[in-house]
Amino acid sequence: MTEAAHQMTSNPLPPRHRKAGSVGVGAGLRISIMDKEGNHLGTNQRGEVAIQGANVFRGYANNPEANARAFVNGWFRTGDEGFLDTDCYLHLTGRIKDIIIRGGENIAPHEVDEVLLRNPAVAAAVTFGCPHPVLGEEVATAVVLNEGFSASQSELIKYCRKFLADYKVPKKIYLVKSIPTTATGKIRRRAVATALLDPAANVESEG
View 1 (cartoon, rainbow, N blue to C red):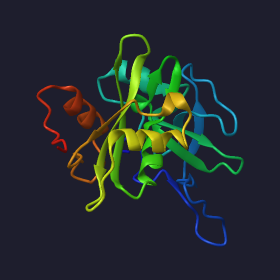
View 2 (cartoon, one colour; view 1 turned 135 degrees about the horizontal axis):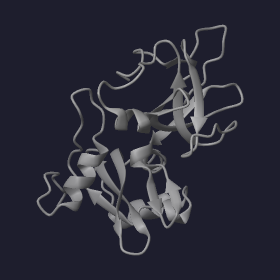
View 3 (tube, rainbow, N blue to C red; view 1 turned 120 degrees about the horizontal axis):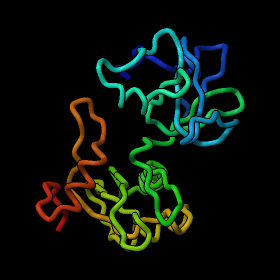
């Protein structure tokens, strides 16, 4: 993050243990997991990743409102959701702003993405929340198929049901030709959602 050093965590070199799926341990800073009220959470509890250390900036210039949102008791809220395991290795589960809240249940979009990406037919998957009149949000996913493969929306939804709780299963899957990314190759999850939910969408759909 630009608000901290270029490297906040790292999987250590041997002989220390490297954990696949984890971003490692703190590199010169302290890491905590907090709830919405700023309380520190325990091991394996999901919440917002907060950092503290000499390499973390002290605040935004001339923006007290932003500072009030970003800092709590000297800890900087990163906007990332994750948890610390028993060895204090950090595991990221998504961006707080991307979390889908369906009928009071929190759903991490990347969890749905990962299930679909295990399907041989799927080249890319981006999950997002779409408005629902009763539940608040419903789960939807944009999928790019691998060349030479075919799969229908119903087939992909059925596949998800094998691995996900029912409330996490996408109710709508959009088959698209491509998914927009940033200049650094990061998926623009919000841009995908906006484009597909907007009648004037600029995401090209299949067939």
